[in-house]
Length: 136
Image 1 (cartoon, rainbow, N blue to C red):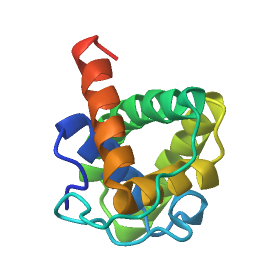
Image 2 (cartoon, one colour):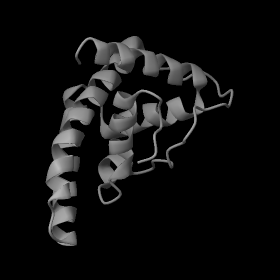
Image 3 (tube, rainbow, N blue to C red):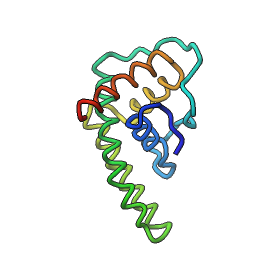
Image 4 (tube, rainbow, N blue to C red):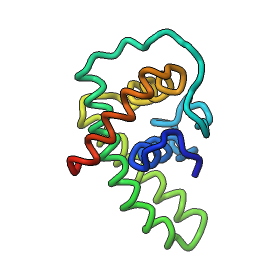
């Protein structure tokens, strides 16, 4: 899995969000993940602290969901089973994001903004690292 961020928690959460190609709710307009931090000087994204915290909280939940479903998907016997499991995992991910007060589109918008804005990227990376150190 290509890593978008340097911290394992962030990489797992975002990569999971973007990796389910069969589930358009979270991956509708997702761009391919970058392998290095963004280097462009795009204008700073305009997300308030509460929205970013919701993103971080959702990312932590997505990592947990991804770990849970990874084992189930590894045991899928057929492509059809895999597709069914991916759809179930995707639905659970969308619910987790929405439980944090964000739509899947808002979550993806923040992810894309972080890919384009080094300052936002750094801020989210730091927030997720802190959340990881605090135990989620």
